[in-house]
Length: 443
Image (cartoon, rainbow, N blue to C red):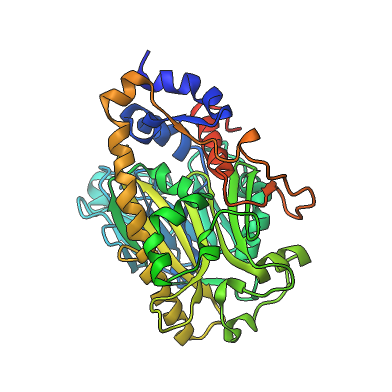
């Protein structure tokens, strides 16, 4: 029996005890299975519709390691097309972003409309007189869905709908995207950089690992970039972890009742906020919010927060979207988008962009802390010693009798809520969802 088979045989029972084999963070066989059982079977985030506002706008994106073209066709329909010519398989689009009516393969010149339809073949009258163009267009992802401007795709022909996949977790997504009539808008291009770590490392971190902030991000706390409340100090006064919400989780830091924070957005922005399509309970969570961060399985995360690019300026609220793009069992390409409410002024959007770039980007004060730690986990996971000893990691914080904090019985939203930052319930939720996919139990 292979190491991957042995790990999967026991990982379900291990997780019930709050344990996880360290090899899940760096094993080639497991990784190859993930590409097929996780990424080829899940709804994967592609991009935001505001990135391709005009007909012909496109950007290159990935599902697992498979290349796709994220494009708004000439009729205004968003398409997710496999970036591979039907003639010899070479990529028909080589520019990261742009605008075009057609994609032309540089190998033999086969030409496709921006909706994927085959439109031209050189020497057709001489060698392809009977070619049925309708059968040889670019192949689309079997399913493409839009939720409040978030575009997801699924490669499984038998996949459930996007709404069903997101399930009750939509309640929390709505809080991030429905505060104003215009919704959220992407500012600039996504930042991209690679780290020597497994893709699950970032995904589990953003799902609610509040306890790491006091250690890893201590320098940011010491210089005053943020305070301990926003950073998730242990305790029950301001932190909430929500887990087992249809396979996803969210971590919330907030002010007390009747207080207003709105992620540190200034009045010039919050004047556009209103209950609108939100329930009173959802709007109250937004009003009191300091930080919301979570992960939608497998590799889409977000953090809604107010931070600053300078101690001389007040914090500015922004929403950062994340994709933990797998590039191997021990390599991840991080994609990071910065968003702000569409109604905000251009001046505020520039300010929000600077705040996001200075905190959660390749040069960001928080980002550099995390990516300095994660590679060491991948290094440990591939060691012979970890394999022969059957090394397991401890995910027991807040599990059972480890904590005396009671659940919030009157929590207004879906999922299970606990009023504490000292827990790893969200991380256990993430890995249980991973385990179900890997064992073929995701349905």
